[in-house]
Image 1 (cartoon, one colour):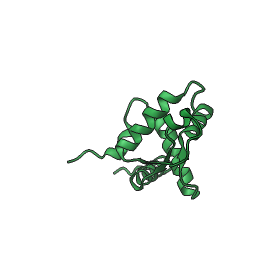
Image 2 (image 1 turned 180 degrees about the vertical axis):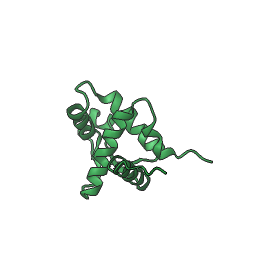
Image 3 (image 1 turned 30 degrees about the vertical axis):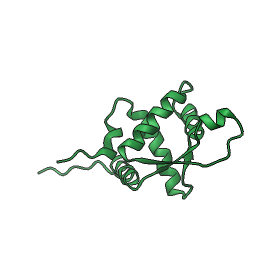
Length: 119
């Protein structure tokens, strides 16, 4: 049996951060709003998670989610106006089909009625 990589973020140490990020991407997917950019993820996480959440954490979290198959990233080809813009490549992140399936499963589990049948 193979490990299901897109479900990794549910069992790692920083699962709260990953759940918030994936929840936002899933919400945008359901609203047909598409992708998010790195600064938008930082802003959202500083509002919803912690004011101390910064560039190092967002880079680590987004790269992990991309490597697990939950998100895909695409570089935006823009004409840089400064050396800083040239160094900081502009990536757009979007939830993958596997990411949508995992989030739908999580939603179903967390919103199901906890009824068990005994004999």
